[in-house]
Image: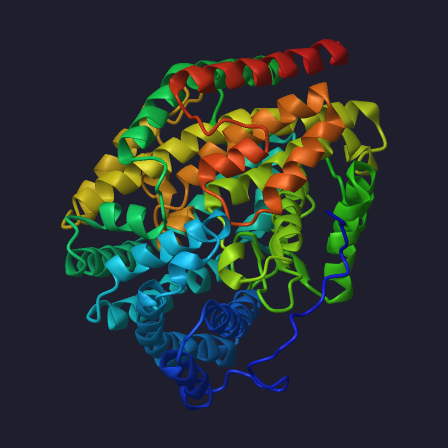
Length: 577
């Protein structure tokens, strides 16, 4: 395929060029047209699908911009109201039509004549959506859409004061890399004390979300929200038992490596006891890595890095910058976290993050850059539905980019020693992320299997699960109050339930691609591009196969991949010495 980042907004052939989503009244006629239109041939059906795809792209992009603007400034009530209006006044009415249009497609006599090689996954999703749809869930889902965004507004207001200056929690966290241990402890405690101030608010919000989600599940005939959500997320290729297997494999094959990492950290810092505020630190006299100073510098250096990896990757970011599709620096009033938001009609996505001049920000930027490239590579697909790829491959796109790009991180660091430290940081993170993924996933299984639990029961269970996946090398004594609410910092629990184990599955895929890259860089990049350009037109195992990977997260496979990363870390250590 010819790679070009000169992405073009999709031409409109059904709706007017100047059409914007303002009210339901201005959108409904196009939905009615689709619902009432006669389909008398395969050609009619194909045109109907293209027109429906156009409506989907326009509506999706409108909703995305409302969310982007609101997360960029959570203090602007008008932006919040615009998002809420869409969720309450437009989205519910759209759902009625979406279900009717899904049924029209499945029942159309010419649907079976569509090319099943291309349409299989799309039609499978449509059938799944028909199965899940319940009229009584529409108001509940609208309420959930609004409530889920409250987390960002609450977290966006969290700041701490240090040396007379106000910092967001993301900005303050950079002091946890400082070589002054007393300062690290002070910052750690201030961050967690600030989180404790909103403990009750976030507990109440989460309880309400659980109650509403459980109602949605039972309305649709499911025992619990977990089972409903697995179906909704289209997890056709693995089960809850596979998730339990993943949790166990992390305990068996990842935790020993994590204990080794923290034992080395403890020795390096020459500490008798390693506390949680020590895990990001360097020895006295070693300054924290500072790969960039401003958001613009982060962008420019990432472009330079991507250019060496593959010119097309850099061109994608340059196109986004031309369109002003970046908001990178942390500031008060901005929602926490980072994301790449695909824009279905215009094609070039938007990257949002909270950079605070830390090494972690480089990882976030190249991670979201990987997602952005996925958006570019799948934009050519004819229907919007074809671009709705599974999260388990979407996160391979981002996590593999973290590993591919490491060879070119010299653009961020002048000194070879700093570059090696950065790579070491990244490989440690590849390993240390697994227990947190297991904790968040296992916690959610319990939460939704026991939807009537109390706040106290939730805190007790959380601590028990957290302890299962905590390193014995770190001393958490006296920090139980902070530990009991650690889950409240995880955006996914509030906004995108059960979307988390995907990171673990995808990290395995990313490591597999990195193994390929070490043996044949060009072939690995080609496999990466080929798999991402398929969008969602293939099943998950087929997408992994296109990337030269096996869709496998058995304990044996995890053990093999962990050994590979461990060996790469040993090589880095040997080079440093």
